[in-house]
Image (cartoon, rainbow, N blue to C red; front, side, top):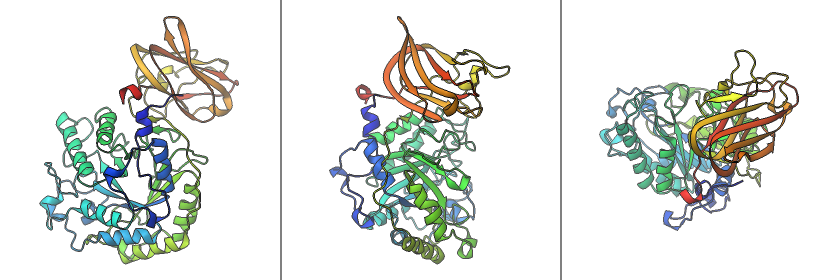
Length: 479
C-alpha cells in the first residue's frame, strides 16, 4: 500500500508523552514539529477523556439550537470562570477540552471581525475562546474547538451556499487558527448530516481541510458524520466520531481512532432545570462508557455545559470530581494501526455502472448512488459477481472502498475481492485482498484510468454491496 506524506503529516498534538494531566503543558507552537497522522491519532486516543463545553447563545434560551434572530446582547455571562472549567476537568482526570465556538444558529463566541453575530457586539465584550484556551493551557490541558458549518444567522444552509458564505467560513476559521495558538483538534458539525443536508460538495470538505492544515498541520479534523457514513472507515475525518446521545455506538472490535461524545446533563446546552436535574451517575460514565470505550481505541468526551453565568453548576463540579475519584486510566492503551483518511468526493458516485447479474428491481446503480442504506445484490446463483464503473474520462485513483450492504453478510459469503482498472493492455489488478471487515478502505498505488471493476469470490450465499468507492487522495508529489 502507498500512503501520502500529506496523510501521514496531518495530525494533532505534540510530541509530549502522556503522563497524566500534569505532564501535558504545551510547548510553544513554534517549537513543535509536524507529526505523522498515525502518531498523532495514537496520542489523541491516549488522551482518553475530555470535556465538551457547550456554551453559546442557546445557553441563554433553554434551547438546544439558539434562536438565530435573537440579539447579540442576550449572550451575557456575568461571572465567567474558565479557570473553574479547567479545574473541574482536572478533577475528573480529563486531559483536554473542546468549546463550541459557533453552533448551528451561527453566533460566534470570540471577537471575530467578520460580519456575524458575535460577542464583540454583546456586553460585556469578553472573548470566550481566549479565556478558555488560556485557562486550559495554564492547567496543562490540551485544547480543541467545535465549529458548525451550518449557520442559520448567515443563511448557510443546504441549497443556499454561495462563494461569499464559504469565504465567511474560511475567514472565521482563519481567526480561530491564527489568533489562539496551537489547536489540537477541530470538531466540525452540521455538515453532510441528515438534519442539515449541506453536502461536502456544497462546502468543499477538501478545501476546508486544506485550509486548516495550511495554518496548523498538527490539528486533527473530526466531523460528526457517523449518522451518514459507515462506522468502519475514516470518511471525512481524521478521527471517527460517534454521538452517543443519538444512539451511535462504537462497534465491538473497532480499530479506528475514535471519539464518543455524550453529555452529563439531559441536553447539550445548560437548562435552568439542570441545577436540580438528573446527572449521569459516575459509575455509568466510568464503568459503562469510559473504560470499555478506551479499550476500543476511543476517547470519551463528556459534555459539562456551563451555566448562563459562565460557571459550572455545583452539582456538575461535584459529579466530575466523583468521576475522577472512581477512574484510573489503564496503561498502556492498545495502539491503533494505519487507516486511510477519505477527504475527496467519490468518483464512482452517479457514474454508469454494470454488474454480472441483478435480481428484479435491484440494479447495480444502488451500489454507487451515494446512499449507504441501499445496496446491489447479484443473483444467488452468481458465484463470481462483479461491478464495473465507467468514469467516462480518465481519473487518478489512490484509495478504494467496498462497503457491505444490508442483505446478507459480506464477511461470511465472500472470500475475497479484487479491484482492477482498464488500461491499454486490458484489465490490470490494482489490489486483491481477503474480506476481513464489512467496510474495506485501502490505499493503493495511484493509477489513472476511466474504467474500474471489483470482482468477488462468493460462497453461494446472500451478498450485497452498499457502496463502491474510488477516491483521488493527494500523494507525496502533490503535498
